Amino acid sequence: MIGTYVCDLDELPEVGAAKADVDGRIVSIVRTEDGEVHAIDDTCTHANVSLSEGEVDGCAIECWLHGSRFDLRTGAPSNLPATVPVAVHTVQVTEAGDVLVALAD
Image 1 (cartoon, rainbow, N blue to C red):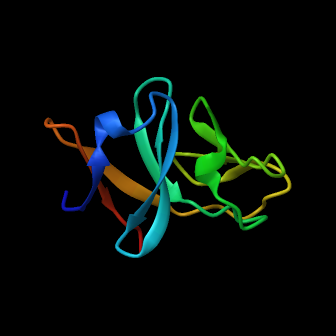
Image 2: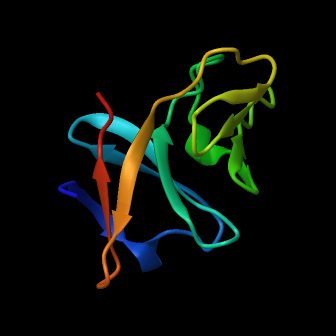
């Protein structure tokens, strides 16, 4: 995969999210409890706030403002008030620990 270098894996929270600018697009880089790394658009589709400030629970992130939850694999909202999914981007973590992101179209 060819992607944009975003950060080193050890710069991410053990469980949680960090905001990153990937080629001019703001994304949340999220590490789950099982160590998987995901990338989604950072803006909640309901309230236009940063998802990287939300709580990670399993393979979902919850918006801190109104509690909308988004699946990190699909971007689909799993509870209201959000009804529109967020974009999901491809992530690769290299053997050296580099986190690379390829943006979705």
